[in-house]
Each structure stands twice: as structure tokens, then as C-alpha cells.
Image 1 (cartoon, helix red, strand yellow):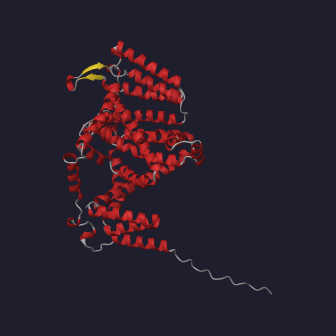
Image 2 (tube, helix red, strand yellow):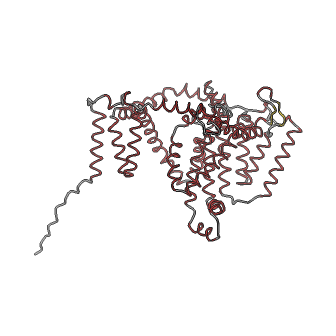
Image 3 (spheres, one colour):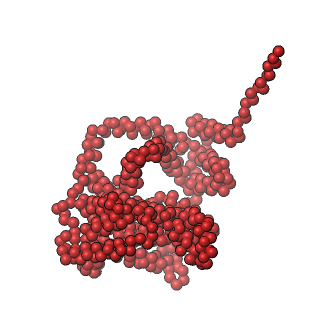
Length: 514
């Protein structure tokens, strides 16, 4: 006779405390947003009497810096003028080399003493650098990119932009490298500059312009300084990460060889971290080119100014043409800097002698034949009318379809998300955000998020902040839904990745205004 063993009754697994907590938070959040609950008005927006009002204090501080601040031997205003002079000197020479030539005098009375580098010399220089760095393919790409600037009438503006990039990039790289090395050597310095880097990379670009314009005035120098400040933080971060990633064996070898601290840094660690550091150089180049339109608002000129004026005139074709010129300039410089990462240092001394000789010969040819030093206007082409007509045709034939898509997105996605966020009481959002920080990063992150939330609320920017959160949140969601599948496709297919890479480079370098 067999005896059946009774199975123990299945016991329900208790819900984890974290899941229970977040489920309760979700229910309360939905209730606060969806139910018509009567709560005091101050829960929606902090009353004016409670606000900090730091905007007047900041304005007063900047005025004090410019008018009264002094360091004893010199004033703050004299310091800013000295910085402007130091930065203006190399910028003038770079602009003379690529765009204006060497001038005597100022303004309309200026007389050209020596011309700028001829267009064909710059195209040849780009092609030679491409050949040296990456072979025939890169030579064709770089040469055609610069030839496009001449053929499509963007040469003069592009050379002004190239001159500012030629100064901003070395300053951004050098400053980022030195600050990064200081952060690598000292934990205190790293702890000090890390929040500053976070602030510099998250503060909107336009916020850079106001204090720089106030302190350094209107002109190319202020624009170049804004570009350096904007492009430097990635170089600092990459420098610290690259130096920390150098294998311990390499460091020990330098110590055993008797290197001093200075020698260990510059002769062992920096050369060992060279590939990663060149990635930082690449980032500085791309971010500097992303800044050209914003910088044009405070006097940078160049391609950014062309895009800005086209937008003001609603000249869609002209704006796209100048924007494409920025894209091609960025792609050419990006590919050249990437190819440098794959090349061992110290190669090609003979090439640089040949490079200098060819450039000198072409420059002298331009002096002897000044008629060919500038690209003939009769040979220029323009795609501006084509793009303008194309946009007009799309508006005429697809207006109803585009309007229906826009209305559906606004009514079914954007408006509900906006109402959900703007109708939540600010103390509840700040509390939930701090609680999320505590669960994810402990007490320090919770206190940081709590402080940020209270700062936003008590500065009277809560509703604006919620509008920004809803726009950014929807954008991230849509970008993820599009980008993740495309990224998987590019990872599985090299052919697809080649197409995607070209599209990504275009979208990342095409100015956002365009």
C-alpha cells in the first residue's frame, strides 16, 4: 500500500518593502495629479514673499566686479582687459592667416600688407593631412570638404570660423589637460572641480554669454572665450579618467627608472594615455564647432553669423547651406583628429618638411598670381534656392498630414504629460526626488537632490522647471524608442552602421538652429 505524501501548502511571498513603498508613492502621485483635490495655492508655486530673490544680488555682484573690484596692484576690469589682449593677439594672427591677411590700420582705413592663405593652398593642406593621417580615402574626404566651402560660396565665413577654432581648440585642450592632471594628482582638487564640471556641462549655453558679454564686451575675443569654457569640461574629465586608467605596471616602471613627479607625468603617464587623450581633443573640436552660432551672437562672425542672419530673414536655403558648411568642416576635422589617434607619435618628420614646403610654394604662387588666390565668384554654386523650394513644396503638399501628426502628438502625449507634472504639489515632487536619490545613491545624493529641488522652488522657477522636465522627459523617451533599435541594427550590420554613422555625424554637427 502506497502512502501519498501531502505537499506543503504554497505560501505567498511577502512583497518587498521597496516595491511596496514605490507602489504607495505611485498611487499617491496619481491621486494628487488626477483627482480634483483642494490644496493650498502655495503648494503649486512658492509665494513671492518666500522667494530668495538672488537675481538682483547676482546683478549687483557683477556690477561690483566690473566697477569696484580690485586685487591691490590691479583692478578686475584691468584683469579682464589683459585676458582679452592675450587672447586677441593669437586670434588676430589666425584670422590674418586664414581670412583677412595681414592688415595695417583699423576699420575701413585698414590696408592689406600680405594676403591670407589662398583657397587652393588650404584645400591642398587638408588633403595632404588626410593622406598622411588616413590614406587616400581621408585625403579625398578632407579635400572635398574644404573644396565645397569654396565652390558653394562659404569660403570667407568658413575661414573666420576656422581661425577661431584654431585658437579655441588648443586653449581648450591645454587648459583641460592641465586641470585634469591637477585633478588626477590631488583628490581635493578632483572633489572641487567635479561639481564645477557638472555645472559647466549642464548650464545652458546662453547662460555663458551674459556674464562673458558683461565682463569682456562684444567681439571675437569674448566669443572665443565662451567657446573655450563650453568645450573644456570633457577634456578635463577624459584626462582624469585616462590617467587613472594607465596600468599600474607603467607607473611602477617610471618610479623604478628614477623619474621625478614632473617626469612621471609628462614622460610616462601622458604618453601612455595618449589614445584616450586624443578622444578628448576630438570632443573639444566638435563642441567648439557646435558653439559657432551661439558665439556669433556676441561677435564671433563666420559661418555661425551667416546661419543667424539667414534665420532672421527666414532664408531657409541660405541657413541650410551655411549649416551644411559647418557640418562638412566638423566632419573633416573630426576624421583627421580620429586618424591621429591611430598613428604613433613621432612619425612623418619628412612629411612635415614637405608639407611646409608645399604650403610656402602655394602661398608664393598666390602672391605672384593674385587673381587665382580667391575662388572666382563666377564659379560658385548655390543650393539655397533648391532647399527653399523644397521646404515650400513640402509645406504646400504635406501641410495637412504634418498638422495632423503634430496635433495628435500634442493632444495625446505632450498635453497629458505637461498637466500631470505641473499639477503636482512641489513639496511632494521634491520629497519623492530626494527619496529616489536616497534609494539610488544614499544620503549624500538625497541631500543634493533635496537642496536642488528647494532651490528651484524658492527661486520661483518651479513651473518653468516642470515644463522643462516634461519636454526633456518626452524627448528622452522618443529618442530611446528610435535610437535603441537603430543602435541594435548598426551593431548587427556594418553596412547599416556606415549609413547610420553618416546620418549621426550630420545631425550631431548640424547646428540646432538650422
